[in-house]
Amino acid sequence: MPAIELKLEKTPVGSAAHFTGVVEPVGSSGYKFSGTLKGTCALNREKEIFVNTVRIGHGGVSGKYTHLDFPLKGGSENTFKVEGEGERAPNEKVEFYVGVNEGLSGQFEEGPETICDLGVISGASENGQKKSQQDKLIKQEGVFFKKLLADFDVETYDREFFKQEFTRLNFSEEKIKKLNLSEGETNKLNEILGKKI
Image 1 (cartoon, rainbow, N blue to C red):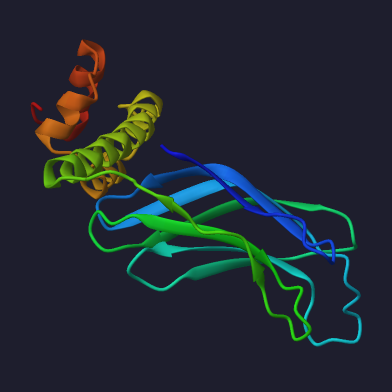
Image 2 (cartoon, rainbow, N blue to C red):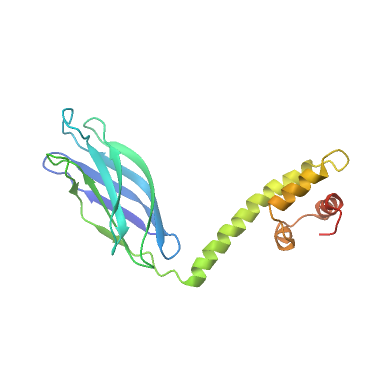
């Protein structure tokens, strides 16, 4: 997860921007980033149709930039928590920059671009990421399912409701094995469903 730092050094009119954060690939054709953005612009824009704004721009090196804009209040430094994501050509590098709209008509003064190399994500790696996400989802569903099983009173509860939940969660035998049910939980499940799992 590469760290990134972006700067627009203080300009003659006192504007500045600074971002520190991290960026990571999302498969071979995406990326996401997060961090802290700080911006300053002391220009009086009360009579304008636009406000002082700090911007972070990002995009694949062969594509167009996407912008995240944040309005600045007052003449002192403003701080923002930033989260963003984007698309890129497979395995290409990603560019970032920061800027402030200090121009007479709101044009942005921009800092230098920073290029991030997120490495090569192979098909196997991408499949590995997807599998990891699937396993995480199964684990979350498993927590819910185990609680449902623990709370279920075989004598008084509606078995059809339980079966509907069981079907909705699409619990195959393979999924159930990953839940590592205890012997007692397994026996209870078999009794509710009326069959051996």
